[in-house]
Image (cartoon, rainbow, N blue to C red; front, side):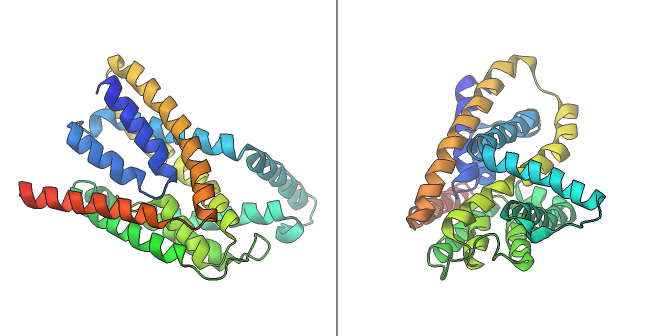
Length: 278
């Protein structure tokens, strides 16, 4: 893997992780066409996820600090016999909603891990995932009432959004697009739907890193790739920040159709490639 390839992969990871175009699908396609063996760069892929995680922490640092403080207060309330008091503040309720949304994602990821990994071996499956992504973005853009904030949100809404995030483990299916779709279908305010989608990405990405890291460390990596890896991670973090800010603006303006057109064009190109090459 060259410096240029690492930078391109980092750029794509950062942008596609938060823009609704599927980072997993794009990385798999790029690695396929670059001729990069996935096992050889597994650690690099894991570190790219760390780079995008840094992006979320930078953009939502205040929310994350508030959530950590509220977690400490919740523990204090439990120890003093006051109970969970889920509705005592918007921040506390948000924390519980993030936990509830993460549970179905984790269950889906664990139960269907082998199935999802098998899909990455076929570029055609990635194309199908991209087609699905485009479809849910069209539906999300035309979603009806969006008037719920965190205090109006129900646990069933969080579970639904978490299930959508679990489905997005499929290559080509956008995680941000799926969770945004879930939030808008649930009637969340657009600004809150975007924030919730990105905040629940934290445990999802962390979980992915924790699960993949032992395998990545066992696979090892050529020490000569240290420079390209560092460059790729930095680019992933920077482009992730740009993508998050872009997504906030795009969703507020109800302009998701451009992403639908893009992912469908990529899907058509991949399908045409498969048909031509046999």
